[in-house]
Image 1 (cartoon, rainbow, N blue to C red):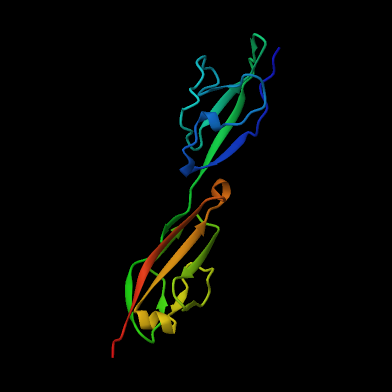
Image 2: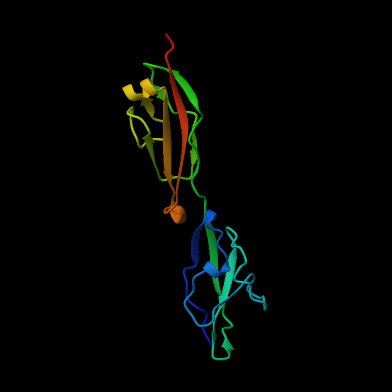
Length: 170
């Protein structure tokens, strides 16, 4: 009697990676994946994985396919979502609070500037940026934010930027 293949009962993937049945992992010989415990037709390796869905695996050793099926549940983690913010104009001598930027599904964040100003904290979602003298002289700076994912999306990062114009309002 051929046993079912072995695998982690819960397999996590990042939702942005377009994972398919071919990405499921199991240890065994000639592993086949099925949509239902009683199906007789295996899934195509190109079948997209669905969050919260159970997939059932068999293995074939020689000419004998296992009658027992391994039950694997797929979890798709959401990738970081970000909108760095909105382009803005401030008066020279003013600071700017980056509070019009939206984020979700991230583990950490970092901010950068194309200029010589500084953030009160480079690693918070909504820092305050104070333009430097070169920013004021040029009248423009680009502020960018990078988000790092969580869970199966931990290796995923997203970067986007926006324009901050500095006007002489006097």
